[in-house]
Length: 485
Ligand code: ADP
Image (cartoon, rainbow, N blue to C red; front, top):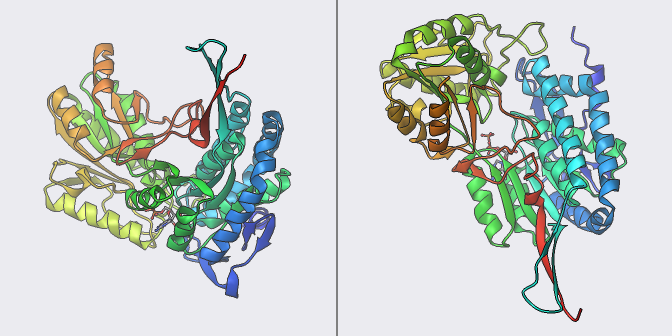
């Protein structure tokens, strides 16, 4: 029997507004389920406009004092938060697996990645430098300083419910901003846990606020507010565009981490074993439910058969099961809609000539467990060539020339992550320059780290999270022209 005592110490069935745990008006609630079993694991408030406005008011009130702290003081609090996360990694990872489904080892990795982001931003908080510009006028000094933008609205998805908030809350707090966050209703507890962490780390009331519930109403309250100066969103391109349009009315800044359609190109000269290993990581992590997961494999003809055979062998070894089961590498999909999408895209690919060489159907466990799948004989007219499958399904598309591979890889409105494997140095530089993507993994299937800029181009969004660039999105530049000197 699964012992959830530790995980439940972080579960809050309430919203966190102005340092208080509160319900929604009229005590409206909704249920949260475990995707591995369908069991109800608790409820959350269904907050809407009024609750979000209260949270925004609290963040507004808390802003001057938080922004006015020394960077070192904010850094100390953030470091305390990072340490708390590390001290509670098991509890937070169990809570994450419980509501999201991913294998416990992956959940642990996500939680620790969250701690790493918070620590990174604590360090960066002390390096928000300005500039001195040589003056073109006699008796003048020109200075540039950076200031926190103000209250930030943050909306996050269910696939990385803990670390997505780390990137946003960590950066905002380091810059001196205050936050109103809305986690996904599918995985709210890993988001609400940030309220518990803020409380325990001694972050003042109102600096971090978290609301759950009616997504469109919460989003409208955020985008409609004059006080909220920035929206940071990770999720679908559809919702990202809605929020960006609505933000324009009050000329807010926004950062958008949206959909991807990552290509993974394997050239004839690639190290076959390394490419297969990279492919496994880039495709099947989190059951294929990451925005940088490979969606299309382009494999050059000379290596195609060997790569397909080796990958199929590996795919068949992936153990499917509850994230809590020892050795489980593939958890359930998040919900029935996700399963239906995977089934539709696999059906379309096989109808258009794709050959299933591994998996290809609902797993014997039932529910939303889907067999890790490999399909060969991909064609550009398959829906999966353009649409994100967001599941454990890999399709191999053969190609002949480098130019063809680049053309197919770029033939999408998305531009988040791309991967390729080659041992040819000149080709590596050529291809990475030609790929219209925000991130490129070259002989590397895992690229996310807090020290590097995460983000995309085209319909994959704007802005970068993590790295030395990550704080810029939370800072306004102010120019001071000082005369009479
Ligand atoms: P996904 O397909 O990954 O679930 P969504 O874009 O639907 O992506 O969801 C990402 C986040 O956006 C979630 O927190 C969800 O509740 C929220 N969301 C969905 N619709 C809206 C909306 N109209 N306004 C604001 N947030 C929304």
